[in-house]
Image 1 (spheres, rainbow, N blue to C red):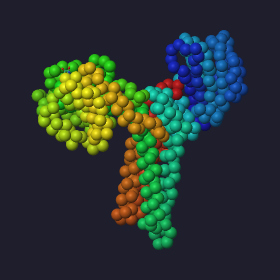
Image 2: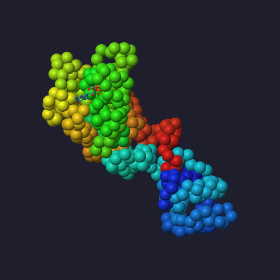
Image 3: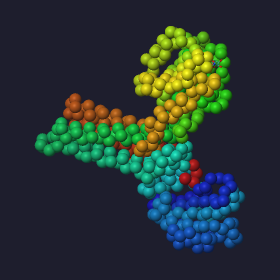
Image 4: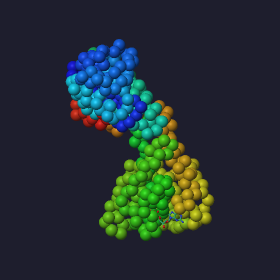
Length: 452
Ligand SMILES: Nc1nc2c(ncn2[C@@H]2O[C@H](COP(=O)(O)OP(=O)(O)O)[C@@H](O)[C@H]2O)c(=O)[nH]1
Ligand SMILES: [Mg+2]
């Protein structure tokens, strides 16, 4: 249990509600409970009581719950008061608790104490925040999985396997003359291969989870006047972008978020890709290309009414230019002018969709295509809620593993292998908080809301 002060905060959202909850945590809870309730309630039993001010007058009445340390969310003594959910009533209750010696909790301080007392690790604390902020049912399920420790458990399994391997490798360093664990034997390589496999499946699950939370960036690109801004407006269901038949109208990146199948899609409309008329347009085109390389999908728009060779060449050039691994969809727009039929060729490489941004014909085909391709990772199969921070740590650990692997193959130098394995393990430890710096912890918990 942390010997510290006793903190108080409103645990329910501010504003009016049927019930408002005030949470108190810390060593002074028994004294404070006795003062505000007249007596300390039985552990873990709901007690109906009046909440008293300094002169013994009732501020409110409601339920009181006492969770003695260490069996509470924070691991400290916790008191929960459930009163009527009016801002004035709750404010006077919180002020009474401050008067009794509590301190107002900082953002995320309850979770931070839970972490310090070994109740949850950092990844689980983050999952609490992600669950509260979940924007879709799939994101919420992923957060619950991480909260229940699935993500942390898989990180720890990997840690344990790395430890086993390090023991072997370090024995080879410490007892070079002994016949025991020989670094270059097949067993070491096998274990490393096995760890790689486990690693990649965890990375994939974390990546899917991060996408559920962060959403996907879909960039709309193409030649000027192809109808990119019209398509953005159509998908947004709103006049987000200026549509004009003057080429070069859109110069800056324009962003708009929509939900498709519960996944946030960040649509980006870009400047038309052509030889720029001026410096501003050139910068717009540079930004458009940069956005394309980072996109989860690029929608490349072509004017179906203009079946000219320039356009065909431009498409081929962009397909070649785009970063490998960025999925690409070609959309043939303006079928109302060309007389084309709204349809999708999803098996083509890249997939093609024929539509009209102006009339809306075929736009549902594009929406469905975006939903399915987003669904590839949102299918929720084992997605674990994860953040950028986790993905970065996993990527660093993976890089160290690869280095260990090549050191093993190339030189068999046990010292190099050992050091990379140690660094891989340390990067993994950052996820659960084992090797996380104080500053990083402060930043993580500080981003939570008060009362959490
Ligand atoms: N007939 C027809 N015109 C369209 C369609 N989509 C866009 N346009 C027109 O094409 C011109 C350029 O559209 P805009 O969305 O500004 O293209 P951008 O330069 O790619 O952003 C405008 O005059 C639009 O009204 C479409 O599906 N059918
Ligand atoms: Mg435009």
